[in-house]
Length: 95
Image (tube, rainbow, N blue to C red):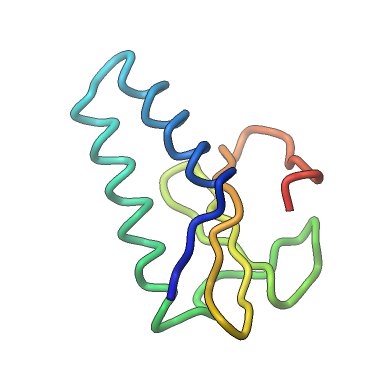
């Protein structure tokens, strides 16, 4: 099961709002691609790479467009922790 943390859901809303200022259509396309990418994690949790800033084999990331989708593999589920734009500094307090 893939679960979204509250901060990750908030990141998704902020991404949509930011892109939608120019185009609601492209905002929806980006959000759909991010969500679709996370759905694969249930079957293939190890598809991402270990987050270099964290160095924990259970905390990985996928790249979608210019976004880093951070997630954690737990015995019960895959939890999406955050979505960070690749040009932003990594928020160490997010995980």
